[in-house]
Amino acid sequence: MKDTLHFLVSKIVDHPDDVIVDEETTEGKTLLTIHANTEDMGKIIGKQGRIIKAIRDLIKILGAKHNTYVDVAIAENQESRDNSQESRVQSI
Image (cartoon, rainbow, N blue to C red; front, side, top):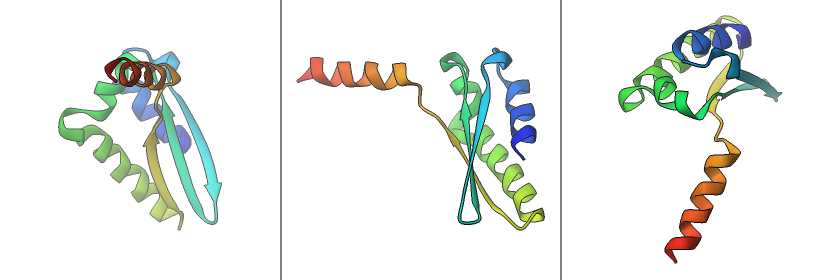
């Protein structure tokens, strides 16, 4: 499932070399986290979240075939977190 997710996402984005998919399994549940270039986040999410919803649906169906619960998340970049914290501090 991890390889399938990596394949799908890397075909959508402009910077496919920056795509990394982390897999974390706990108690029969698998979480796949997508790390990608900040510029590509809009392409992964899509208008009104349609692309990421379709990707999640496909991966969940694959998980169901393997009797596993799978969820897909998009990681926030450290830079974007730092910038949002700076803007909050500046606005106060």
